[in-house]
Image 1 (cartoon, rainbow, N blue to C red):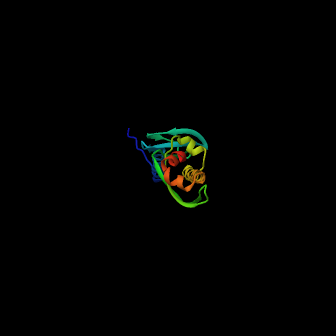
Image 2 (image 1 turned 90 degrees about the horizontal axis):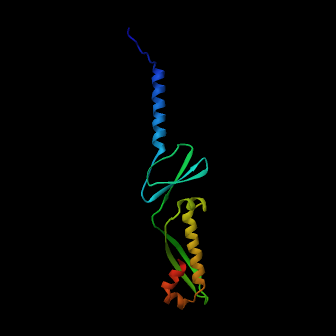
Length: 149
């Protein structure tokens, strides 16, 4: 007794398409998170936590991942004209070094944590320089740097 298997062209094409869809879903569910990154995961809009580093699995379509870099980042603060305590206008150019310590808070508490850090640095710089006189600004830079931090 010989069994013959007849597969139609339509069935073969459907099988290949299903295989392609399954492979695409599997490949999009695997994320590689580097040592200096964390993957903050939202499931259907709700925060479920962060993952990484290493090989991480997410559920395609249902999970929304966002990668957060934990390395120190330098932000160039735009040049500002600031009035000191003795009413002298000075042009101040600054650089801010920042790094994310809590990836969940960086995503949940502000919309754009990089922009928020830059604006906070600008405001703090204006506040500290506005409280000192020009002589103090020029002679006590290290002390002012500590106050700005």
